[in-house]
Image (cartoon, rainbow, N blue to C red; front, side, top):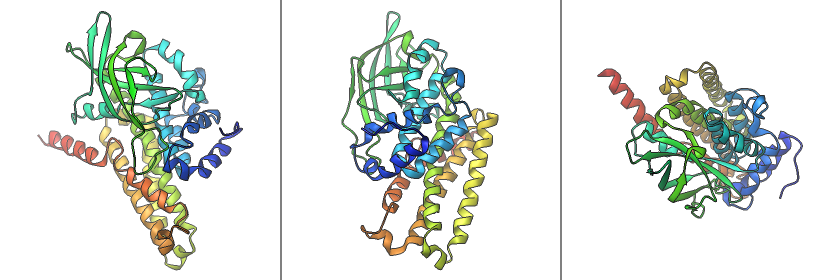
Length: 361
């Protein structure tokens, strides 16, 4: 285990030093949540009255970006943890929040956002994959979550949207990894980000009642938390783009090849997108105008691709040599993840086209 940390800078230094390991396998995977928790990262944007350090959701976005500059794997874990914390902050279930929020903020337990399927459900892309059969005052849950991140074996919580079989509204519930009927698969064999504790969950005969309820109506709750879900996700793209731009800018080849103008142009586009994200999170416009946030997410993914391409151009042949590639090869694979993380760019483009067709009709 890593030694206790005294500052966020120390945590970031540890993440940078272990970025290759976190990308390649699970050796240091279980240290990320306790490390970020001990350094206070999970408290950013959480009200002081609830144990946080104050600030806004955008402050949490910037914190995720700082981590993503060092390791997208660690930032992905951070995103999952912070999303789950946000669900508890927005939940009407005060007892559930009081029970779990302190441990989540401290990093003693991992929080996994199993709502990727639910976000697609909200847009009509797919059906919910967990059924809730009424049994007295509770439900019996059955189904699966095929891709969930931050399933730390030492202890985790998962949020999932469930479809009642009696026609009641879809709801959002929480359950722990040691709940009877929950089975975690082995880690998924990802192309990269293998230290993110990403696996599938099988749900068989799981008892769930009022104590585990995050919100009784998913169609009310999901639009409310979607701005933070996507906004915090944007922090991953922001940090990765910044890392590649910094690497390109500091390459001697960049100056010799006249690439500094391209660096400046991408930086300007990134600054503009970040400013729009900050403004939209601050005034709440994304809650009713989701398309604006979708477009920012799409733009940021494009900027990531431009940034890593530019890093390759600046580094030249050295980037293709194992002995001299540095962090480029890892960032190249990290960048390949940005378009496919849920909601994928294909899904976002499809939703924008659907909305445009509805407006035209």
